[in-house]
Amino acid sequence: MNKIFLYFLLFLIYSFMGWLMEVILTVIKEHKFVNRGFLIGPYCPIYGSGCLLIIILLNRYLDSPIILFFMAIIICSILEYLTSYVMEKIFNARWWDYSDKRFNLNGRICLETMIPFGVLGTLITYVINPFYVKILSSIPEIILNIIAIILFLVFITDIGVSCNVVTTLKKEIKKAEKDQTEEITKKIRAVLGKRSILHRRLVHAFPNLKTSREILLELQAKVNNAIEKIDSKKNRG
Image 1 (tube, rainbow, N blue to C red):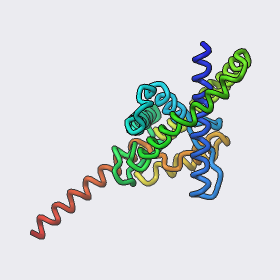
Image 2: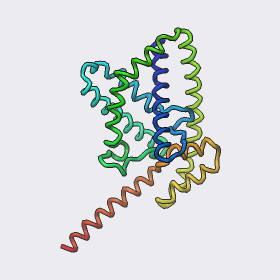
Image 3: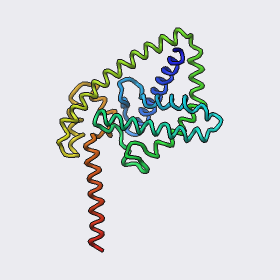
Image 4: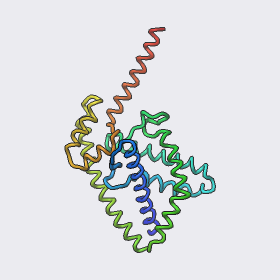
């Protein structure tokens, strides 16, 4: 049980670090603060999950930094792809999209983010995780357990509230699915912008959010354009 509490606290620490990194990058790019992530609190669970997987699964590669580097890329890329896929199936929306990036796979992952996964995974394994484990291990067991339980209750409450907010988004997506491609996201954002601060936060947190139907229509448009170009070359020939 103590090990579970330790892993949960590490999960929250890395989730917070991921959130902080996202916020800093947004400030640099857009010069404004945006509470990033699916949940309301200052944490992005996908980062915490990725870090725990690296810590648990890659211990056997501690003597091989290069292998660990590439394994970290593989683990985090699979996690990001599956998270994108599952969330799209559940909520009928794509929360992030790398289709405009080079060397992307179905817009869910791309080479631009895969390399940093390897770098961060290596740093976490050799430097960051030993540091946090040492700090957490120095805290009396009873206090550590109480902190873990309280934070777990807060985390579970956050998940419940956030899922309720996203349910509203899913309903609005279904209502807007009959619109034209360029109108879908615009309409959804306009509706959510008139609701509570939690709904508006979600809109700002995922500026590249697209509905599944919107993505399908964009893909169809690209295919049609490609076919038209091929036909045009044949006619000129």
